[in-house]
Length: 450
Ligand code: NAP
Image (cartoon, rainbow, N blue to C red):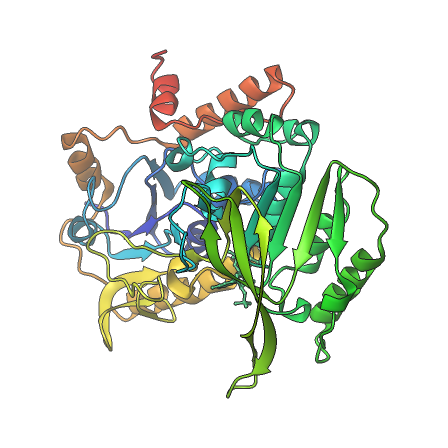
């Protein structure tokens, strides 16, 4: 039996990798198993970051180095809750770090939200990124109008992908199915709807700017909607400047138009059998008791003709069986990363990191300090002998359990083969990679079954 500190990290996305990285920096005998339900690593870097942002995806090189460390194993295609339970993890590992992110989305709670044509932005993002969970999704791109609700960076991504030309998309690693569907898109008018004002936009400036630099899309911003104070906030001032510039930009008769509309809340989605229009209520801003500006209806409304509505009002963590969850907040209850079994009761040896720890906020890099915080607590508990006793630690026991259940574990070497195959398939089509979007195709490619 190994005497090393054994750690399971559940979720091979940015926060999981950064946790492993920090643990590896210590002078400590350690074994880390990085477990993911998918055969592929990188979490939202593969399944969330927009395909036209390939540069951002190059952060995976850092993760590859972490995975190549001799103390780290990747166990892909292993689902916690069924292939291994929480109780089994605690039998085999001194510490378990939940890093599985937020897998669902928040609803709007308005009439008509269940009509066909009303979708979550997260479904569209998963689909165009070739995430196996979303490959069966279909989006009707046959009507000219589309509304995207929300003013965050996910909404910006969705708007941009809808506005790109097929040639621009073909230069990316967008999923083959999505590329084909978007090729025949009839979308012309893309409305991005914010319930508050321009100063409250949740987008970051480089992402906002990109919307005004689309080769075949005009941008439409109404000057009268741009009243708003930066309050001395430099980032907000930059956004307001960019928006003011957009408002004076002449239309160039491009194929598509991106309309940014502020101070509007969706009231209802309407249509016979599917979404045909969205009713928006106009808002004004009022200060709440804590000094922040909230949207309040003015009583006026307007209707836009749209065939598709994407709600992009935040991801939501849904948890995994047996692991504590605060369902309202969509996070694992925790104190700075130490998991709580019940209010005030720390679960020994269980930690959390990333979006399932703090909620769906921040960019990739935000996960680094977050991972350091959780990993430092793990190390502190290790030093103090407070981790989980793990009566049967070690990899042999885990491997035996998985083998007994017939789980086809995908190793890092397997992933490197899949990666090479995807790149080769892409090359043939003049693209950076052509992703496998089905788990069974990935396994068949690995095991030589076609
Ligand atoms: P987000 O940044 O939290 O934005 C959510 C948006 O939805 C906000 O504009 C919010 O408005 C709005 N909203 C919430 N509830 C609403 C409702 N009921 N009705 C209307 N609007 C509502 O979330 P996100 O866009 O999903 O992004 C998640 C995180 O990933 C963010 O930190 C983001 O920066 C990051 N991300 C980064 C990139 C990048 O760096 N390129 C790309 C994608 C995502 P209020 O402000 O009024 O609440």
